Image (cartoon, rainbow, N blue to C red; front, side):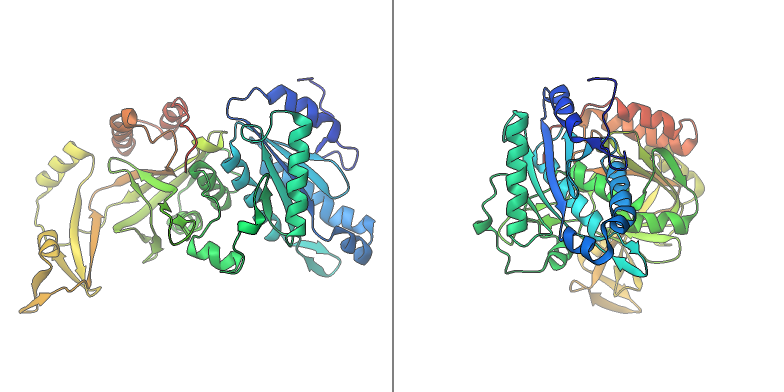
Amino acid sequence: MSSKILLSEKFEILRADKQLKKDFEAYQKDEEGLGLIFFDIDHFKSLNTKYTETVVDKDILAPFQRQLLELVRLRGFAYSVGGDEFIILLHNVNQEETLAFANRLLETARNTVFKIMEDDVNITLSAGVANSSSNSRDYQALRELANQAENKAKANGRNQVVFSGQDLSAVDNSAESPKESEQLGIVKVFPESTVFFYDRFCSAFPGVRGIHWFTKPDEAIKRLSKMLRPPLSLTKDKHSGTLSPVWWWRDGNLHIRKFDKVEDDIVLLDWFELKIDKVAAVNPGSYYQCFVYVQTSPLEPTGLYPRNEDEIQCCVDAFGYCLEEYGLFDKQYKVTRAEYDDNAAMINGELIDFDGNIELRVRHITPYNFIIAAQNSPINNSRFDQTLKQLMNNLLKGSTSLEQVEEVISQLPKREPRG
């Protein structure tokens, strides 16, 4: 690629249209393909009519272009190809990843408030998506396909993404609203899990590059709550399977279904009680390598399993931590794991059948740590399981730094795209 980058004349923020073909040709040999998103701002002319072109340029177009530049950073490039028309070129992506990025682009635009005079103004976008691995490897053909898809998005009501070749007649728009569908976890296309996780990571840890620590428990929990907000289980419809794109990794490796704050510094991650100590957001520079490191403080033992310090230390020596499993009946009575399994216990002098009114709980009575990442993260590698366990144990001991862990993880191979 030429060392001289052509910027668009207006604002000189995004790349120029003339630069797009050069970049496409430079990257078109990417094995995983190039994604091209063609989009414009809905009802842009009415904004110019209401506020004048000069005001709209200053208060909407310029900040919007800077937002695009930050959004696409590390993923590809953004181009200004007309007054309110833009193109994003993504490299090393398949169609699902390109589509997921386009949906994130629209969500970001919808949630941004632009201040014009005394008014708060929101904008929406209509976008078309085409991908070189599934549509065409020819620049002009791919651009035209994305443009045609964008025109379909506008004709279908605007404020949406259409991918090239999508049959809009097969899309059921009579069900839930987009917001209701999002809350229910209903999606038209399963997003690639690393893209889904990266979107959540960016919303919870905006601006993080490299490693950034959050050592105040309340701040850490606020960030985790944002990243692990519902939905964490996605489905296309009632007949399809479920995708759980966010997992946590230590030595159990489980997908995350829910996350709730139960006390000031205590959260419930599925059935695990965790007293959050500190969190680190790790963004090595590639979206699929991002992860979050979580370290917890010990919780008080339940009292159900009397153990002395030597027994607890023996457990730590063997596993790196010590935990207790128990059942919580009627949200207040603790029973042993054996009683939980037997579905009954002696409570206040009476034999009680739980009849489903009991929840499994796990609490760590020594310091504990784990990593949150995408289901399809490079961490999801069976050959890495024992290494990760040892790294986590060494982090708790203080004999390994998170920088060293990040370096090891950055060397893991990228997994094939999948839901």
